[in-house]
Length: 222
Image 1: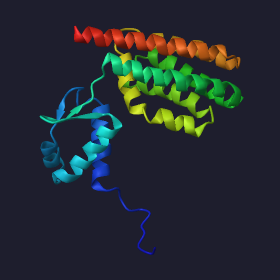
Image 2: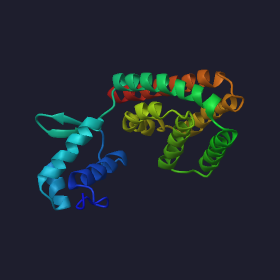
Image 3: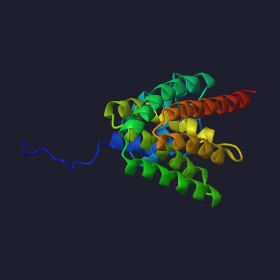
């Protein structure tokens, strides 16, 4: 027990897991791109072993796909994947918003409203997509947080990385951020009234996202 160190640094493979994950999420690796573990090991000045362990964890997360010929490639969304992800989102976020309406305090609802106001201001100021995606994610995360159901949050967190891929693609297109904000504001209008119509509007919002994403993915295929 005396040798147990609470401040022991993370093992190498976990440090590289976090680093490579950020590189993927930040777009340093494109969907479908091969990741060469030998090159990464040389770049980081380590053996291939911790890099390989990190990449196996990323495969479990769904960020990487193992390929017998090329090793690991970055996950690439398909219309079928998006539909499955949004089926999960719609089911879980519908419950989250229903719980949020009844459980959130007035102060918590005010915080969501302030977030939407800040988002509108940043859109006017021409904020970068990465910042608007962050605010978008925060809106959905607050609803989840204010549902005050930790097990529900855990379920959505398990697919959060894949949802992020969808968000990045969802913000492609002129005026798209403003369209998404408008739908968020419609959802919140009924949340503020503590009306179950907010659930219906959230479902419509997610359906619109799904249709938009599938169109973009099908266009890329063509």
